[in-house]
Image (cartoon, rainbow, N blue to C red; front, side, top):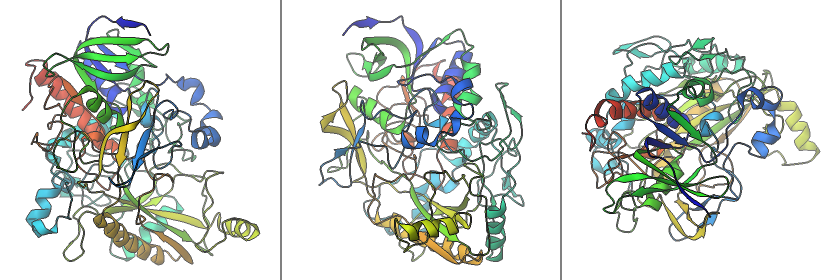
Length: 587
């Protein structure tokens, strides 16, 4: 193996996805020399995003193209500390992005703002219900910032990504048609909301008849042609399906490729290096200052890239793994409940209600990743939890992503899993079926965490990240409760049959659920319980910033991308306005 030392730069950014592209663009714009390192390949959007290639279900869904190569690097998983973790050999519960754009290339486009309660989960729960209401073993905590702190950056990201929606709270005044439970926003969405399809209209009528206040889900699928602040033009969505898990053939969904990359690649002081797998952040002799990173290139050479500032913007697992491999922060120990890196791993607590009709037909192959309307009455602390035995909640929305020919085969519970009766039932209900999603929050627990596996290693001989996770009793109770409420809406919609599916008693890594992995390098205002401060700056190595859902101390019911984008914009502003003027710990 050849070892090469490259010329020093101002900034090295690890991971060129949603967060990484914004960081590189803003810091290059500020005049800094920036190198972006991506372990995957570059994508030619003009050919790979074009029809008919963009609608290849075998390529994207079955063969998992444009996702992490598990033969080179995977993770190990177990439900409890007492079990032996085993490697994930096939992508199942979540799909890890790889390549320029990361997981943001294939996301569905739901772009929520977290509720004010989500940022102050622990303190608000104790204030309203008392400390005994916190579940046993729960380590959920406040973020170290408030919704109000993040609001300007939500606004910034929504306009960068052209989000379509309807405000429910403008500067403290409730607005008809929007989410009445959201935090105050400073201005309307940059694009109007999508019009509901037939399934969405049925949901709206039924929800209103039960006293709920439905509203359109905010979407990154353009509801009209849009020019963003970087002067990049996106087309209008035609709801052709093949959305979440696929690229957009119309160039109508906001991704790093459509919103940032074309503008970023024009900067002369930015250099993109693909097939650059970073294996560690290099520290000085006192382990208090980063001096760059080391990566393996496509030829197997070990490359050292010196830099004044190191910013990790890769996925949750890799952000945490790089910190552990590099000795940045104290690793978490669940036995002593000490340490911070790997602490508070959490996931999404999803459920589903599938409706079957005899007198209504739908067009299942039309839709996009965020088309359906939603209700928020059972999210966060929007309802009284007294006597329920859990905290947190879930959002309920219509799932109108578009039916994939191979994967889509809903049948009522009790139908044989194969054979002529299964075929007849599937044929009968194929256009008489729709679904409601129950997207629930997930609390953090002492025994759910990430660390380095003591046995299994990657292709470079480095320990894999080990995931120890299971749902808590709190999460199972919450999911069952909100799923029952969703079933009430389904009944009001007039369905003949329904399948009600809350989260199972035991988490499985096998079936796909969501790519909403959180924690491991969590943020907070106490270095004893957080790996990074409220500006996502390492407490131990101040010239290292760690940006992504790895910073979430627990997960909201809402999809994470909007909050990742907002945190990114806030951190970049802090670097430009504060850190560059006076390097050191940001307060």
